[in-house]
Amino acid sequence: MINKPDRSFFDAPTLQVARSLLGMKLCRRTSEGLTAGYIIETEGYLGEDDKACHSYKRRSPDGRTNIMYGESGYAYVYLVYGMYYCFNVVTRPSGIPEAVLVRALFPSDGIKLMEMRRNTGKQKALCSGPGKLCKALSIDKSCYGLDLLDSELYIEYGIAIPDIAVDITPRINIAYAGEDADKPYRFVIKDTGIFL
DNA sequence: CGGAAGATTTCT
DNA sequence: GAAATCTTCCGA
Image 1 (cartoon, rainbow, N blue to C red):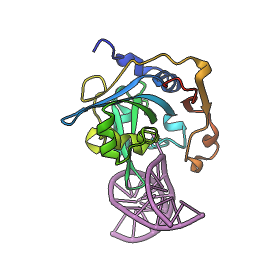
Image 2: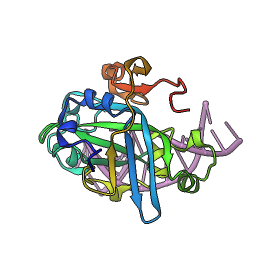
Image 3: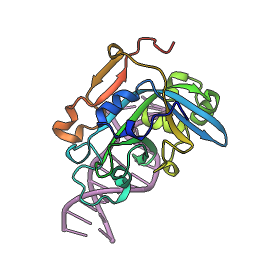
Image 4: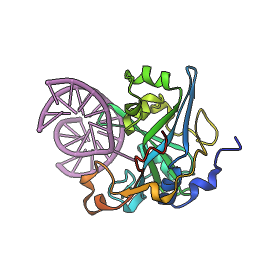
């Protein structure tokens, strides 16, 4: 509890939150047990002016993006390509539809459970993608709108990541977004063996 | 109301 | 390199 960030942490500018999330722990508790991992890759999605963002130029805050228009610190989960879920953290105060996509984790807790859900024994492959980590942590549509400050899906402080260990690059698989596809909104921890 | 496209993964 | 697979969104 004490080691969880409060809502003001998520109210901050989206790219700042994306950077800060690196090294923090994403935790998921279910009847099967606890699964968690350190966040090693994130991407920022900057609302109505970002062509890659689901809330780009959307007039009415209806449908799946609804949660992004509300308070920060909530989970935005959606189905992509008809078969995989993606997990996002809503940022900024009410009225600003921005979010951070969590793209990869370094597994830390409940690894056995993750292996069963993912049907693989290779730790490196357990959470190395948006769809993979959702399956490993049992995140699906029922997690849409959960409060990350008060639910079975939450974020707590992990380890500090120095700037020298962070790479900033354009986002992945959003070529359709025109010039916004080149914006450096992706943050990833370099593979320096920091977790080994 | 129909069609198209998608913040991916996995296998060949 | 291509298929799998279905919700959401936009145009008509």
